[in-house]
Length: 195
Length: 178
Image 1 (cartoon, rainbow over the protein chains, first blue to last red):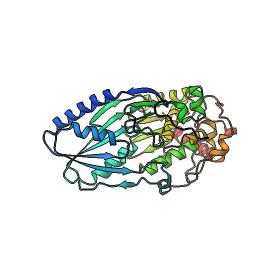
Image 2: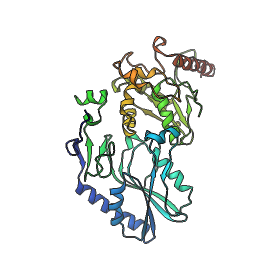
Image 3: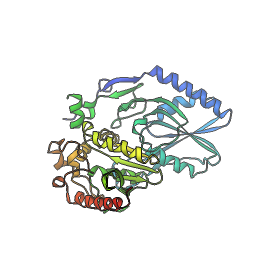
Image 4: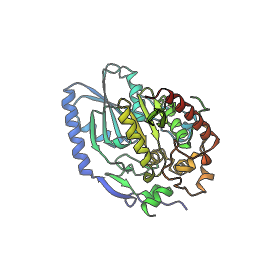
């Protein structure tokens, strides 16, 4: 029988509290406001994981700004996989040509998605293209991409909450937590976790 | 991409699919680096990274052996970095591969693609043989083995073919060894 998820009980450890996230997002907002110094900026958020971060960050930035949303298919994402190529499921709704663009990401681990996105957006000729991520997991990096704004550098653990999901769940947690291995356990994880 | 690439390990085929998905160009085992010579100048040990990603100028070596068994691979990698400081190489461990599969919602697949079981090399275009493989316990033997060192008795046809190609490259490299 399928186990019903218990959002809070499934989290083994709270990595970042709601307060820590709020404080850091405010700091990032101030830095971005200073760096762009009154220039309008377009925030491009990548659905779905970065939605809470985007919502908080945009309100912490004291600049004239536009927002836009993109969604790209993920490897292993059902029907899209058969095409063998990443797909833009939702494209920008307005041009970014000659705009200052800031990509807002929830987490960067391998860098594969971001690498694809950066190449795609550069092709639209923005004036500048920078990257802001709430979480950076450098231990998993395959593609090195310079990141301009990093909220937190986190250890090599599977995290959920504040937009991050496992099986589309846990996004609504107000904190970032480490998912218990038994929630997603294959034999190796189960063995390591003693379950 | 070439669907006939004879991957030595199913995890490598999966990685190739991931790289293709994200439009990252790759070539499979394009180079062999000699890392140890005998007194006669013959190559006695070499290292063939699994992938080269030309756009990133990055070599990628995958090992899906359990963490405790990767000591030999780590030693070879250190030696490679000493001898060829200009090359950019990353070692992708079993835990990294599992994390990747978890990220993509394929954690069950990781069990079938890891370790010795994964040496049932799947053709690039075929899905990995998960169900049959998961029915058997993963074995940690041969200890310290990797796809560069796997004994011939345990390898599949594709792996043997890859080993033959490697041996030919070794012979060529030995001819030009210092």
